[in-house]
Length: 299
Image 1: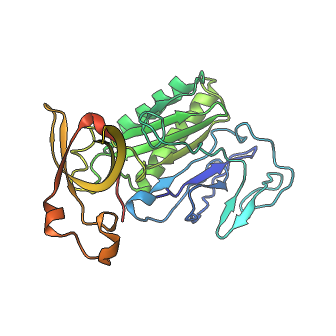
Image 2: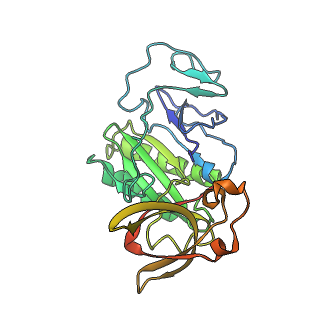
């Protein structure tokens, strides 16, 4: 399931104080052109649609050529020109750097969580600033993923431990984004980091990879899509099904799974009928090592 992302790029020579209120698109990733001190107010939605992206920590968009043509917003002073396309209620620009779409893996700084600094010299500093903001937050937040790009982009995904799905609210994402941006501005002014960094902040989303065994007990009450290896006729095949975690034994390093009564597990010829008693009573025991990929399942 795609996360709704609002990404903002800035090209302005002055600071603005008037808030701009926007509505997000339902697409995976959109970019919105906003002045530096703008506040984003976004609608609340289902757990995996919580996300917000903030904007550049300086007066220019990172590693992007200035727009050649301009359109003006009602709250933008003359001389601050923007090049954008209008899509429904969102002003979208084309030069926001998209995260590369690759198969997620644990520790990739994206859906697999973890930290990837991309070899940039300012990476450790911005990671330290983000960690400080999280620690000082009154909410139960932690960094799920943190990634920096050589082009000056920072991607942050925040996890909320007390939420069933691990999703912060929109207000919490916005509060973190504002504080992180403020500190990036200060660090840029003191030349500790580049002045043209761009920031995107979001929740992990349903695509997050779950670690075995660390994350399984936490999401035990939720169905999970589990891909695993099984040896058949002396060769390994990868199978996938939607399970609930029945139990986990850390000592023997085994999981016991039970089938979830969802359409993916039902016989296509059963015309949507629920699982039968035999299927509901079925338990599958899998060693930690044969799990290939586990995600939260959404119907």
